[in-house]
Each structure stands twice: as structure tokens, then as C-alpha cells.
Length: 310
Length: 310
Image (cartoon, rainbow over all chains, first blue to last red):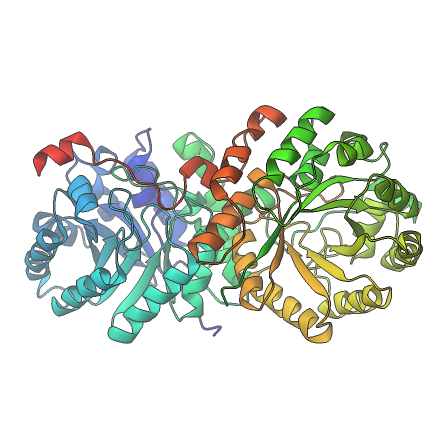
């Protein structure tokens, strides 16, 4: 049970995309370079979406080309369409993360596409990436529930995973976009995907909107999930999902696993030090807790008055 | 696995005790009366400590006498010594919650007593309560780790539970005072207590200092723990434990269990409505998340522009 977990930090994409303040390209690159040195398995560095849709990430190609590549880190970008595939490949992106919604209402709001339309587009995108060494992953938004439609049946998600696997995409990420999933639901859906798709590389992308983020990560880990998305500082949200708030916090997730004796490959001190740079970078405080409280093994001196009484 | 859980709200004690602002006795009573109507199993209403040590709860007797008793709610008070037992019994307290620390350094800082000294005092307190109908519980602070000493060995906690049971105290609460416990540690210690003390009523008192609060509650539930301490809004901390921050948030805990199909007996809407009164009562925002995001089944209307495009 204690084999290593693999963490994908999505702060530079899922976090920066909704920040009110423009973050300079050089600052994004410096931030990602610093993250690269912490031992994370993956970094979702940017999104090759239309600059009109996500102005904050209009510099996607410059960021992807500008970062220093660490040997063991997979650099990911979110990709909405075949043009995005071309731009991402041109910028030497290691992994292309296609995105769709399990619920048609959220798909229409976020991507102007139903699930069927997204899957048809995925086919074009797979073709556009053919013959390259890029890894492919598909993220399924609202996999546990939709802010417009409510519950999303597990059967629908499983059917979508069927179709993703049929397209030859090797990885699937189940996204709890608005933080509505509960631990039993997470465990059940992840187990069902593992059972039906034993070869799919399954990632969980929890949000902490209702405080259940780490509990959901724990529940997924208990049923064998070893890949997690998280955002440094707990940044994130979704511009087209009302009520969405931050991703689970990368350093809090790493801290929990390391406390449990589960290796993450991450230098937690370096990760915390990087998180400490966020408030200045984005201009506001972040929800992460370990960065404020210190690690669980933090020790304090006994107050002088108490020591004297002994 | 889905049998009911029992939740003890400690906001009026663990929360109010560290607030900067004095809360009027009438306001405390109104708050507890409102909580009483939500279906909680227990309410820790106050603490019969020295008013010099905890000035915020100097009105303990007035609060305990002033509240309206709901038939199904057990009203608890924290008790530090035999004089506290008398005062609490005099005010018709249902359950006396004795408190000690597993680590001597925290015991000295918080209570001016080592664990041995606390256990000797517990014997006096049990005698003082003899022949009354009051239920007895003992809370063990720093049961998972101490801010001064670091890790507290499980063997030490188990030995303390032995001695508590020998005193005839029926309930034990394991407190993660500074939020250092991790889910595997929580599960292991709770299982060990259950195994060694099958008749002890075991409660977990998690703090969310490092974001692991609900994950720890989940882990405890998975090994059969059915009693939890939590504070409305996520109030709380410990005045003598540096780095301690809020208890787990009652409404977030109830929400998680209810989403999991685990009954709490609590009217979540009434609980959330009560939590919404906290910022005005205490003069600042609270860390609870469900009160901000709404329940997981919250639905939003599809944006007009999206609806039009269909």
C-alpha cells in the first residue's frame, strides 16, 4: 500500500488562469523552474487555449519554450483542440492533456461542446498528435457532479472512459471540478475505472471547495490510485463553474502522504519554500495550510514560564 | 459501515475560549439553544476552569443553567479539577469531560500537571462525581503528537487509556490538539484502543491545522469510530499549544458524512444557518467551507448566454 504516488502540480495552469492579475511570462517561467527542482512527477505548465478565452495564459508557447526541463519531470499542457495540439507540439510539450466535461451543460458553458462533440474533437486531436512522442491524457471535468445538472451517473463517466480508451489515449483524469465528490463516491468510481480499464493510467483531480479534498485523495489512494493533480498553495477554480474554489493544495497533499510514510518523490521543504513565493506573485493570500502551520514535526520551545516551574 | 455517527459540537467551549472578543452570556445561550435544535448528539457548552485561566468562559455556570435542554442532546462541560466537578454538577451538566495531556510538556504548559499528576487528580474527580448521574469522559490532548516533544508513542496513549478505564471513566477522546496526526496514524491508534478497550466509548477530536482534519475523521470512521468532536465554523485552537488552529468544522464534517450516506442525525440546513450567525457573534470570518460554497447538491442556473446558444 505504501508504494510511491505521482503528483502533477497544476498551479501554473489551473491556478494562474483565474487570477485577476497578469503574471509576467518571466515570472511564470521562474515559478515553474523552481517547481521543477522539487521532485514533482509532472507540471501542468500552461494551456494552449485561445488567448481570448484565457488571456492569462496567452503566453503558453513562450512559457513552454522558456522553462528549463528537468530530466524526471513530465511537462503537460491543457489542449482544447487540434490547433492547440500543433502549438503544444511546436513548443515541445511532453504530455497533451485534452479536456472535456462529463455533463453537457458544463461542457457547453466551459467549452461550447457536449461530451459527444468533445469526443469527436478528441479523435481529430489524437490524429494531430500521431507520429510524435507526446503522451496523451484526457481530463473529464464534472466527473462526480455538475453545478448545473447535479449528480453525474458513474455509468456515464465509465462510458466516456471507454470511448477515450478506444481513441488510444493512455491516461484519464477524473476531475471533481466544483468539489462535490465524497470519499465513498471517489473510491467507487476509481475502483470501477480500474476494474473496467486496467491499462488506463488513472489520475484524480480533487478540489477542496467543501473541505473534502484530502479525504477524497485518501479514499482514492486506498483503492490504488497513485496519480493526483494538485495546485501549489491550493490555487485554482474554474471560470465556467460557479461555486468552484481551489484545487487541493500540493504541499498539503505531499505533507499528508509523507506523514503516512507514502513516498511522493518530492522535497517538501523546497515545495513549501516555493509556495511561500506565491502571495507576492499573485497578490493575495492562498488557502494552503502547511505553509502557515509548518510540517507536523515542527517543534516549539517550551515557554520560559513553564520551563522555570519544573 | 453506514450506521449513524454522533457529533459533539465544541464551538462554545473550544472555540469561544480563544476568541479575542468577550461573548455575552445571553449570546452564548442563544447560540447553544440554536445548536440544540439541529439534532447534534452532544454540545460541549462551556468549561468549569478558573475564570483567571479562561476569562472568556467565566460565565460557565450561568451558561449551563441558562440553556434550554433538548431531550436528545447530552450537554458536556470541560472539567479541570474536583472543584470544577462540583460547580458543573451544581449546574446540572450531563457529562463531565476531564482533560489531560499525553505529553508532560504540554500538560505542564496547559494544565501545570504531568500525565501522572492528571491521572491522580482524575481519581479525585471521579470520587467527587460518585453517586450522581453524570456521565464521565476523559479527553487526552496531544494524543498524536506534541508541539514541544514531537511524536507521542501510541504505547503511552494506550497506557493512559488503561488507567482511565481503571478509574471507571466510560469515554475517552483522543485529541489531535495541534493537527499533526495523519490518517494511517489515526486509524492505527483508534484500532488499538478499540482492540484493547472494547467497552470504552471512543471519540476522535481532530484539528484541521494542516488540512488533514476530514481525512483523519474518514480514517477513524473506516475503523469503526462513531463519535467525533468538531466545532461549528471550524473555530478553535489551544491557547497553550503554539501552532494550533481550528477544530474540524462541524458542518463540513456533517456534510461529508451525509454525502457518504452516513447518518449524523443532524439537520444540515439548520446547522449551516447557525454557522452563518458566527461571524457577527465573534467578529471575524470562520474557516468552514460548506457555509461558503453551499452543499454539494447546490445547483446553479445555466448562464443565459450558454442557454441561448443551445
